[in-house]
Length: 301
Image (tube, rainbow, N blue to C red; front, side, top):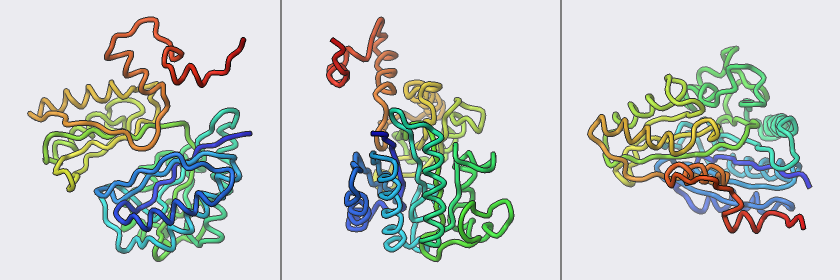
């Protein structure tokens, strides 16, 4: 069976009953397994991870988008994380023998269906982008929901599918295909969001920082701490330990310490094994030395 991973992000992190209905829309679809979901009240967002047969995952993503359209009103939504729709972004990630081209086809099919049946404008991004500038999610989401309400009529901001106007409550949705990424946040032992923004600017690739790192500085009201929120779009290019050490170094320049860090959703085992290799100075280390990974490897004898 071919498999695909899907990691939709919904603009709701504060109402458990709404999140439960969105998750139910996913779990009722056969051949789809819900692996993880992590709500964040400060971001007012929940990141969901599911895996399954491609057509089934597409159906689950559509049903969840329809449910989010009915339950989330972007006119009332506030949160720290950039967003432009009730279902903000839906990436497909190839697993096993599934190809990136197949995930691009899934993104196109889902985008067309969301626009046609739900009347939500859809933008294609990353490997599914039809315009070079739309490969970057930050560029697609520029201005967020409020700015896009005005800009969507401009030729360069019109969607790939659907009307050149936002859905009155659900806004717009971005759908795409991409390799695995790691959502990695580093929290400072400080409430100075200006420091977090300065550090984010230093480490992110778009500002001349580390390659394959996207980041922004945010304030977490629940903890009173400033955060550098990042997408590690290729952990093989820049590992978690590399960006973590860079942030510690920059924070020290501001007289601030790192409090802790967190991973949002799931991540490949190799991303953590690379961190172990670095901090433990491991030599001749193999993933097969990890008991659970060894047990998951088919016996070739």
